[in-house]
Image (tube, rainbow, N blue to C red; front, side, top):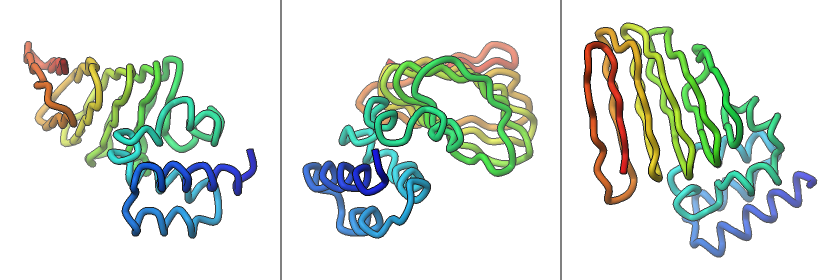
Length: 171
């Protein structure tokens, strides 16, 4: 697909799902695929809820390699060593990621659909995990740092702590 075709499909979905004028305007003014993927990640909560950011759509619009370059994973298993520049990882479809988070900073991991993740979080590093569907998240090697979980439906998360391992299961 060309950039213009991708943009047109995204704008059509935005109209169908009653996107806010500000977000729609940003998409309308986008000049590249990089701008569009950044916009989708910036509005990821809305995009997942309104079925704009689905594994199928993203693969069609951007391709698997482009998505990986932008920290969006939609299929397969991946091991990631997060860098200073990585602040948000999006995991959709049937993707599974094993993440090592370091560098004394905060990271966000967004889980949608049937995706899952395991994270190893180093000292003084924060990790926020947002889950949109039934997912299991394990946070390993928790050493003097903090972990938070956000879930965007009515289910509750179960948190189990054994020694230095935190397992977060969402229903």
